[in-house]
Structures are given as C-alpha cells and as structure tokens.
Length: 128
Length: 162
View: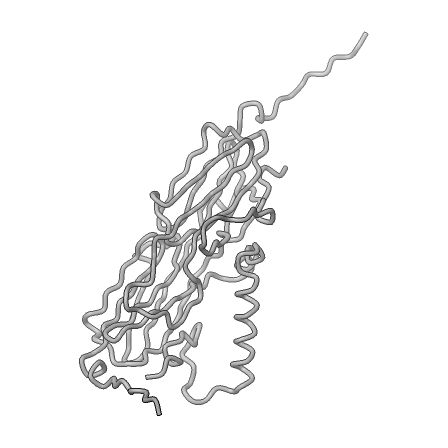
C-alpha cells in the first residue's frame, strides 16, 4: 500500500531566486495514522508552510540564515537555501486532521487515516 | 594564513599536515562538482539512506572571528559535544533513532542516524575561553574569536598597479 507518492521530479518553475533542497524524509505507517519525519535544519515554526491542495501535500521550509555581514564563506558543504517537497496523498488520509510539529529542525507530520480507510470486512452471503 | 587551512579536511581524524597528492585534490574537485550538479534535482534523497549520520559544515571567516555552522537536525544540545585543542575543533555527538521506527511498518527511510565526529583544523590561534556555541533550529553555530596576536599578525598586502 503506497499512501504517499513522491512528486519531487515534476517541479514547476519557481519564482524565487533561491536554492531549493529536498529534505530527507522517513515515512512510517502506524495503525491509525502515517508519520512523516523530515530533516529541515534551520527551519522553525514561523518559516514552515504546509499546504494540502486536492490530494497533493507540499511542505515548504524557509531558512532565515544568511552569512553574517563582513563574513566570507570559506568552506561550504550544505549551502543556504529553502526546502520543498511534495507528496500525493491517497484517499485514505484524512486531510482535515493532519498535525504538524517542528523541533530542532525536524518536522513531524501525523497523517491520520480516514474512517473509510480502516479495514472493513464485507460479509458474503450465498445467493439463492 | 591560507584559506586552504580552514577547510574541514578530516571526517574522523585530522589529516597529517604537508602537501596533498595532486590526484587527491582533483578527485575531491570532481566529487564536489558532481554533488553540486545533482543537488536540487532530487537525486540526493537516497544519499543518506545507507550511511551513518555525518553533519554537513559551513565555515565563514572575518578578520576577528571564525564561525562554524553544522547541520544537526533532531539532535538535542545534551547529545552534542564541542571541544577544542590548540589547533583543532572537534564536534561530536549522536543522532538518536526514533523509537517508533523499530516495530512499525515503514515506507521510506532517508534520514540517517548514529554517532558522528568531525574535526576541523584551525588556521589561527583562538581565544579558547571566549568560544560560543549555540544550537538553534537544528543548526549548531560556533563562534571562535581569533586571539589578539593572530589578528595583529595578519597583514594586508597592497597590490600596486605598474
């Protein structure tokens, strides 16, 4: 069962001149919800933008860090930029009840399963 | 002071000083060229999957101080240890795994975990008791003030036009 489909490849052109990074994520399925963890160092709750449009979930994290004045960057392994990644949600996710928290640069999204998605057993009766 | 000395040359232990083989620097250049090229295309997602966690580091410099930034998402300040010797700075720590992970069904694991250690050469003398380290939003910022002697020793060389 694939609840979340990655959309990273179909990027539309962006309007902001800024580097955009794809955050690493863990997606864990639990009994009544799906947990998504994303590493977004440099992002806090004010810089976070999570949208659900139709069945498309987009996480966007704005990084405020700039190189301080008079400083020159002498070595760079990560570069400064924002984070963005989109996923397609299946009908199983109850989009009204998504919860998001961020701590120490890690976003934690809880995607509850809709009631209709819980497994139902359909009784089969023999036809006459 | 040469800029080259500021680079975090070692992942686990300081590199012995001296000249580097030219092939090695070419290789490093090629590696970083590929890394930079594929950055932003979504290829790097799987990168961390098989490796242990190793933080990425940026370094900036002014006349008076050096700032070192390390990306440490999901790490508490109690799990980070910053130490300094005469000419090296070491950042050690551990990124702990989510407890949920063990028993549940997962679809995607891209984030990495484990203990790490990074050592950077310091190019100049540092005021060891005035070092400041702050962990905020998953980014560790270490400010290293250069010692008075190191600041005074720096000379600017005028370039003349003939």
